[in-house]
Length: 91
Image (cartoon, rainbow, N blue to C red):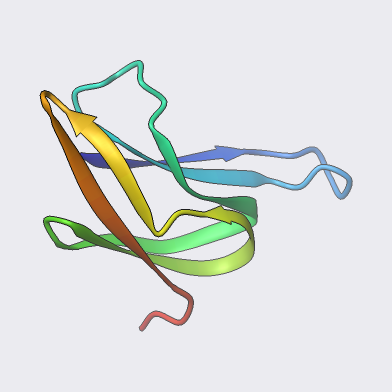
């Protein structure tokens, strides 16, 4: 299970940078995965596994337009439920 951060760079004020955080099985190279977090001008301070089923995502700045507090990812013959916790003030 991995988290992938994708950033698409805009071309000025009318087109802001856009970032997506995806959860997917590590072995699924071509699989896009499930969107956990997305939005404009996002900066992420960290993505940290708390335990085998909980992840903390520390947001620096930006405007979120989508957030999933849990995702289900198929790994081999199992479906894993992962809970995401969005934090905005991380120290």
